[in-house]
Image (cartoon, rainbow, N blue to C red; front, side):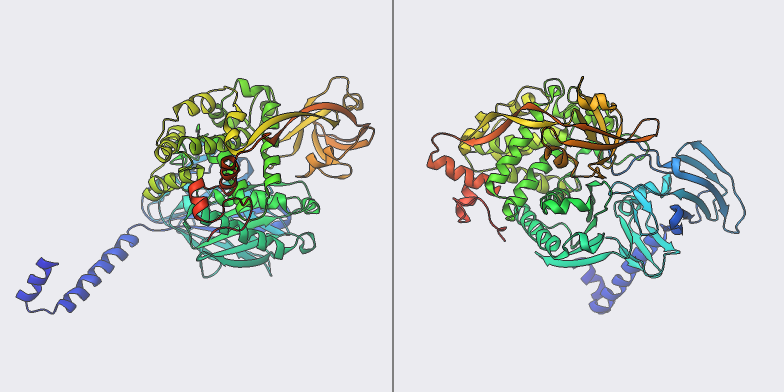
Amino acid sequence: MLSLHKTCSRHKIAPQFFSFVLLFKLLFLTVHAHAAEPAISYMISLASPERHLVEVQLILPAGAAQHEVQLPVWNALYQVRDFAQYINWIRAKDQAGHAIPLREINDSRWQVSGTENGATIEYQMYSDTPGPFGAQLNSQHAFFNLAEILIYPVDGRNAPVRVNFSRVPAGWRIATPLTSLPENGFSAENYDRLVDSPFELGTFQESDFDESGGHFRVIVDADPADYDMQKVTADLHKIVAAAISWMNDRPFDTYTFFYHFPHAAGGGGMEHAYSTAIELSAGIFKQGYYALDTVSAHEFFHLWNVKRIRPQTLEPVDYTKANYTRALWFSEGVTSAVENTIELRGGLLDEKGYLNVVGAEISELERRPARLTQSAEDSSLDAWLEGNPYYRRAERSVSYYNKGALLGVALDLAVRQASHDQASLREVLEWMNVHYAKQGRFFPDSEGVREAAEAVSHADLGWFFTKYVSGTEEVPWDDFLRAVGLHVASVTNTVPDPGFTASRNFDGPLVVADMNQGSEAERAGLQVGDEILELQGKPAGQEARQTLFSLNRGDTLTVKVRSKRGGERELKWQVGSRQELAYELQDLDKITPEQRSCRAAWLKGEAETSAQNAGVAGQTTGTAVK
């Protein structure tokens, strides 16, 4: 500034005029820089909703004489799903509309030549994969995870992108977290940002609210008679208030919740940087809104843990192959632990309900023999096997959601004890948010979590990660829970026994994973690998587990299944019963005032000192501290 001022004086030019000239030059250089990086455009035509056909044009600007273009082989799920299987045809043409060479390199990659003056690649795709992990077009609506339908130029992945929609049915609206442009257009700074922004097109219902300076949209594609929009919005308001206050951060101005409540089977949620997409079977609301609250809290917290507090092993995303990481126990599992804290803080879950949740998680882990052979880190690495029914068997694997959630509870208690209640899991995540997310850095998997835990506790926690994260030692629950006046007790329950166990691969069908030899189910003809379509005459959706547990010995179970060979059949048999060992969190015989104080802070998700300062010692539920 000093040297500039001297120059202005010497030439007798007013400093204000010089500032104007400098500003003009800077604006010119900025515009020129953007102009030097031409945008890539997509036109998505909803060609035939009744046949689930989408037609796409990828418009490449003038530049290189040759490009390689790629359709991702995976997105939304940690599973290679090869979306190119749905491409009916693909071709390329130059600016004049003449055909140019397009050569297939592999089943998801092509090389196009003659593009120096610009080119268009056009193709048709079948799009009918429902749910938050898919891309679907039908007569009712369209929902797109765009990575599943949009080819990208490999050398232009970081270029600015524009997408437009054509042949949108009359009366349909478009919802997305992206910036809107005229003529059903939307823009993104690059391909990654584009495909991390889902689109809902249809006659959806919408609500909104404001909280902590942020604006929230709620988009619902469902029959309005199946849910209460006011209740959905009210619960979401509590969830976002609790999460933002817990993290002391709001890394967005607007955020969108997308919901689908189909009558068919469905379930799950998918996180995005500025939105989430969630699907639950409409029938689940007959049991209340707990399932909706839980998955919403989970997916909303992912905007910190996963989308911003992100493991280095998942960056940059490689759309061409499996991306392996040892950190899903933390990114997914610990998020499952935090979802309960958010519900507690928001008044959507009470102490009894929370202790029941933790007890059920321990019961689930203890019923899986694989807990003694597969670590939480190895479960994370093996996520890409989850699409295989055998892998999901109890003797083969543990879930990084289940084991990770419990490790989140144990790590929270370990940090509290090591820091003499000066820190908790909250401080661990806040530390990672400040030292990784806000600095544009990614954490080095479990070592990064350990670094954060030790930084806030000022203690060596290597033993915890060696034994329970990378190792397979049994977790001594009572040693961790004693500080909050609890212990784990085993109880034997008589439960209905349908004669089989089944599992679901995220948004996939419920599949028979194992059979009890000699059971009525086996005699009725049920087989391992059968896809369960209906239970008791209703779609086998999110509530299937509750349906089975609501049965009694002697009840007739009616199951409609599809075999591996594709044939459908209806089977009936009588339900048996069996003895099952379960685990509960119970009070110690004598609880000290110190343990009660620790528990109150624990249930608020706060270090004891901060909880006392906030005036919440002795409370177990309530609204978020703002």
